Image 1: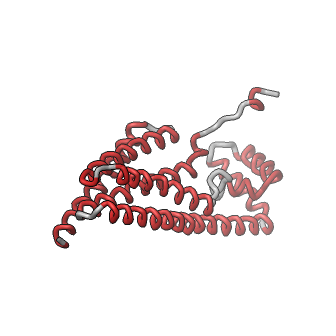
Image 2 (image 1 turned 180 degrees about the horizontal axis):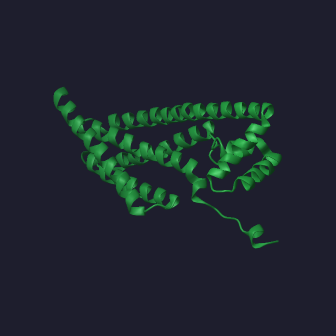
Image 3 (image 1 turned 135 degrees about the vertical axis):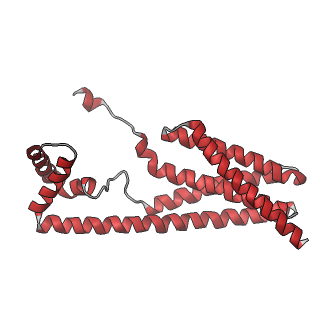
Length: 234
């Protein structure tokens, strides 16, 4: 066995699907719940009202994330299936044209025409549909749409993110809810940014600052709105 037969590489691109859903869910869970808590607390609500609002936001947000991801990724999946069905029909009815089409793709990538056609013929003999799906339609097993997986991942990570600011409310002094939730949530977001950046191979501090800044902006905006509404109501 050659060294290539023994070697198995792991690329960060393999993580893109679950990493995107996990980061989006956790980030939304922290930001939306913390912002909701800060806004309600700024309106002079008591701890029970804040907790009830936060829990309602957690449940509604998790279900919304799951439904949104499922619908969005299902649409992508339907499009992929339609494209594959059309390609399957074209391969069955006009294989010569499809072979030339694949060969031209390889010519565009730098192969000589004769070699490109040889590669196209050999790949199509092995698995014509998979070859066209990968090189013509850009559909691969790695990037294929998985609606249920995306929905579960988003709802789960949203819930985990949303629980964090709720725990802070539960264990903080009532009059210190706003600063406690704000500071801890920014810390959670910075940590999330660092972990996601590291998992994706990007700059750790760049990811941390980006996530932390927008989280702080959202909480600051809801704090201001909560104070304005509280003043008008009271």
